[in-house]
Amino acid sequence: MRSNAPRLAEFDAVERAIVDHLFLLSPSYAVSVGLHEYDGKLPDLSSKATERWAAQADRLLARLRAIPIDALPPARRADRTMLELLLESPLFDLRESHEYERNPMVYLGSASVTAYLVRPYAPALRRAERIAELLEGVPRLLDEGRRRLQPKLPKPFVELALSIGRGLPAHYADAVAFARSAGENVGARVERAASAAGAAVEAMLRWLSDERLPSASEEFALGAERFARLLYVREGLTTPIAEIERRGRDDLARNQSRLAAIAREAGRSVPELLQAMTEDRATAESLIPTARATVEAAKQFVIDHDLVRVPSTATCRVEETPVWARALSTASMDSPGPFESASSEGVYYVTPVDPAWSPTQSEEWLKSLNRPVLKIVTVHEVYPGHYLQFLHLREAPGSLTRKVYFSPSFVEGWAHYTEQLAIEAGLAQGAPLLEVAQLHEALLRNCRLLVSIGLHTHGWSLKQATAFFEREAHLEHLPAQREAIRGTFNPEYFCYTLGKLAILELRERHLAGRFHGSLRAFHDTLLGFGSPPIGLLESLVAHAGP
Image (tube, rainbow, N blue to C red):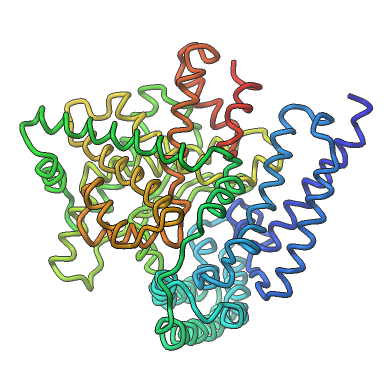
């Protein structure tokens, strides 16, 4: 071990250098994990800047790979792979999928100040100053986007970017109101910056609408080769696409079979069962209070059934989704990052009825976010899903790599897995519509996996993808169409089912033996890993557990 000390020291140094380098390209990532020295910073996304970033990433990868893997202890061997992926993933976006040339959401999505508004990690004055700094950089960021985005963009990307951008002025008005409460001088500074940022957003939207939308293309697919690369750089997976597709179809069939069985037991058709579920819904006024009560009930259920450890610091408040984010979110979780020291509180966002909606639109929204669905979504987002997962990550004594690596399929796979776990533990006892809601959500995620593969490797059209969601997941046309469109720019929405199946397979192999049948021991161990790529789960379990 002593002879390996210099290599271990070099590994520690490379680890720090890789993480620092990653945050240069994505300072918002650093802010999300609680590193507030990056507050207010926007990346330089000009072509020259990202070419320099990529060249340095290549040099860091060479340093990392020069360290023999057998010179590292087992846990750090997994970290070595994760560090490679931390650089390989953005390099894929830069060099292979060409995200910065094809997707205007890259630029408009970076122009949010939500992180500074929702979490009181520092005095209001300091946060307002960082908001001003970020907003002052928005015009430059969006100018870079217009220079870099290619003449022919995928049409769904443009349309969603326009939707996001239209919500930003109201978001900036919230920032101005917050800054005014923090102090007169900083309030004036933020107001000036918000005005300039808002003007830049409006100019970007006009440019997209007038110059890019008319020539937009229906071409968006990655193709099979790049899709396989995506699976590796995000998840460390080398599993053939055909095998992943087969597992997805098998899970789809299992969930459809169970839903049909519940319908037979109730003497109803599946559509009638789903209709009955939508009838149990809150009012516009009671939706947020209902969500708050649901959070507390979910927390108590996890404790009563000893599913996973609930830290004593666990507390989560429920808020309305910010206006700018409502186009893409029904409910979402803002969890404290692993380096966030001020508070462990989570913020659970639920999208309310929009006062501007017609009575028909409002009714459709409340039907879609009915009480059974809201309970399952709360399990997913809060207890024992995302929020509890991130509390474990905060408390885990893992390495720097484990604190900053977030596998989409582990994060979303865990949350989706807990929906099924809650039903297995008896959440739906005496309330069969809760299992119906869980299965409906599972069918949606099954279809996301299969549609992602279809759109990006089999040449599916949006029409085919929409019909698949309607037929296999029992979605109405409009939500099915929205889901299909999401698959064009977010092929990684395969992560829910992909991660859930990985966790279920791991549980089947190891629960009885290594964990002596204890679900809590299995879950606590799993969450103790952080959020690793699912391709590493088997090797991590092999060196862990009781």
